[in-house]
Image 1: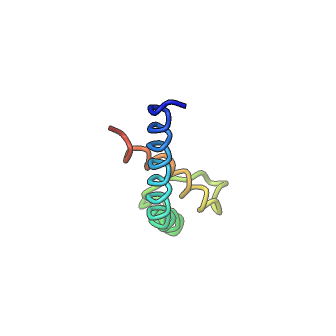
Image 2: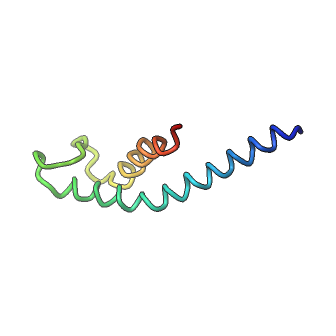
Image 3: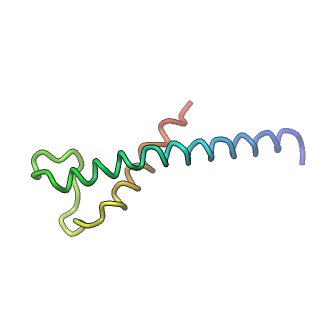
Length: 75
């Protein structure tokens, strides 16, 4: 294995750890927004959701986190 491959691997590992840390810190925020969006009337909801998925609060928070957090790593 060359030096360039080891450096790229460690950089990827560091970014993966950083992503997990940011995910762990921001997931409660996304979960709270998802819960609040369920409790508010439909016209005041920050996030729309499908009528049949009323109890999918955690999966909505997870999907929102995975769709928003990659923007923190754009260069």
